[in-house]
Image 1 (cartoon, helix red, strand yellow):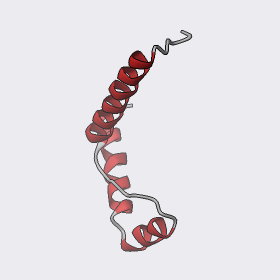
Image 2 (tube, rainbow, N blue to C red; image 1 turned 120 degrees about the horizontal axis):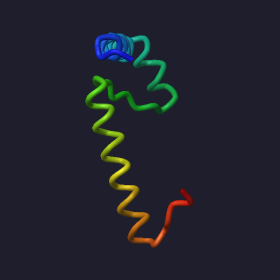
Image 3 (cartoon, rainbow, N blue to C red; image 1 turned 180 degrees about the horizontal axis):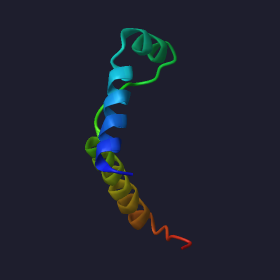
Image 4 (cartoon, one colour; image 1 turned 90 degrees about the vertical axis):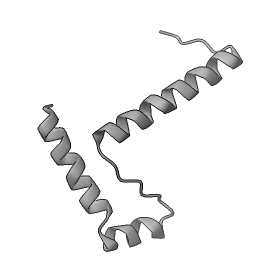
Length: 65
C-alpha cells in the first residue's frame, strides 16, 4: 500500500472518529477513541509487542514458531 493511500485512510478514520455522532455511539458501548495517524498506530503496536515479549520472557514462555 502506498504511503499516500495509507495517510488518506488514516485521515478518513480520524475524521470519522472525531464526528460527535460517532463519538456518542462509541462512548455508549464503552469504547475508547484514540484517533491517530498510521505512524502513531505503528508505534503503539510496536510498543505492545515489546511489552508482551518482555512479559513472556520473564515468565519463560517460548514461541511455537
